[in-house]
Length: 287
Image 1 (cartoon, rainbow, N blue to C red):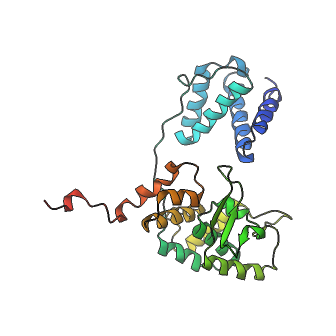
Image 2: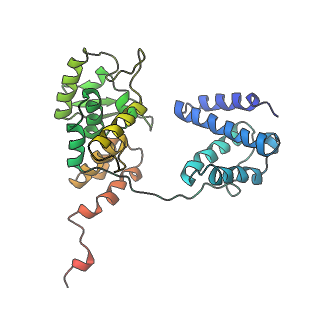
């Protein structure tokens, strides 16, 4: 059995030096420990330096066959191993020996504008009503909505300041008048919080993504939408799709949603293809 800390400490230092997101660092260290479990339990404690490409492929097959992970979920494990080899073991990574896996792309489940308004309108808890309204009306990620502070809301400019998020960039988001009315009512009802707009249970903390997910799922069940596959991220998708169907330019949608690449925004082209009046089926064309 080898000393794990000998490898984990330098890997953790490198990840911190690269200034990766806390969640990415936590995931990578968890994946590395899972790989070490495999070396100890399946390969009699073989040290990482002696592991062969076949050993690594056997580990990935275990993730696929025994743990039933899909290809998309396995790829972060491969990325972690690649970085571990490069930065800690100082060994070249051969992408032809261990390639990233192909995976199927699926369109997200997105509520209609009417359904989204029903979800918000029927929610009795004012705090969660506001969070869902913010995600939908401004196109925010759930993590961005959870971290909002009082100072992030600009009433004079009708803007929401979104701090560094998934793509490490700040941006300004739309503040809808209806959302401002909800936030104002919520702010007075909750004693005018001046720190996090949606505080968590612990002092100086914000509400968690899991709390939002759990509450929204429970509410969807109560109004008969629990089987539709909607999640908090569906609110953000509804924002993007509604703008696209209204004729908004894709570049404008990309900037409003904080997408790093226009490729992330083009999903709304596929989602809205049936509602685009400019596109007609050849079967319906005359001549």
